[in-house]
Length: 204
Image (cartoon, rainbow, N blue to C red; front, side, top):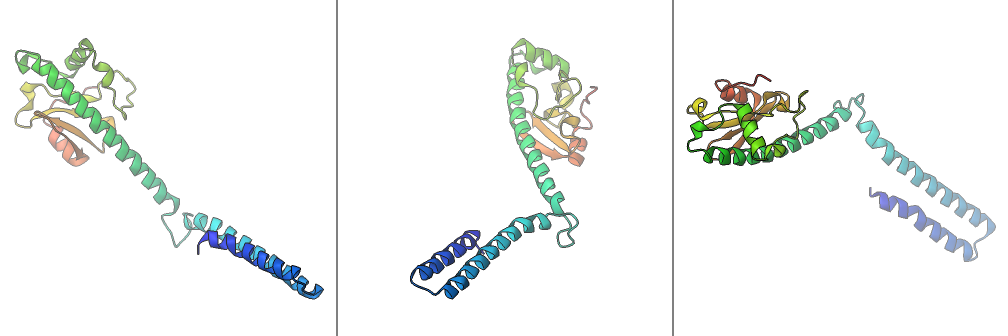
């Protein structure tokens, strides 16, 4: 039932009863009208309290009719945060992909570019783009540690992987992988470790 209707109902009854009282009803009738108004107000209050308490009961983890309880809502909130973090990291990976492409193209040959992740970080510092690197979810004890693992051309083989997120960036639930020629993709943990296993691994 619409709560607005429940609020309007007693008010309408009160106006109707009041009009009847002022139209010349007897003292006894007025008493009945007052009782009716009081009962309608009590009914509206009781229904209002029920509407407030019912959601709390339905979210109670001890409620046998809703075994998930508030846990399900917390899970949905957590999933929403994870999705937001993944989206933010995907955007940052795309920015890093462009930065690496510029650095590699600026060399006569990509093989003359950075040979590991830390050389890449030095190149980022040199061109002033390092400030764009920290990722949304990177919570390392040493924030200066790179949140990505760069794969130099000599180690890419046929994978075409340009870099991938540090495995700890999403609590080992998966990570984004960037490829030569553009493109960033999220991989769940099992696929992520299979793809990145043969590539250079982080030591930090």
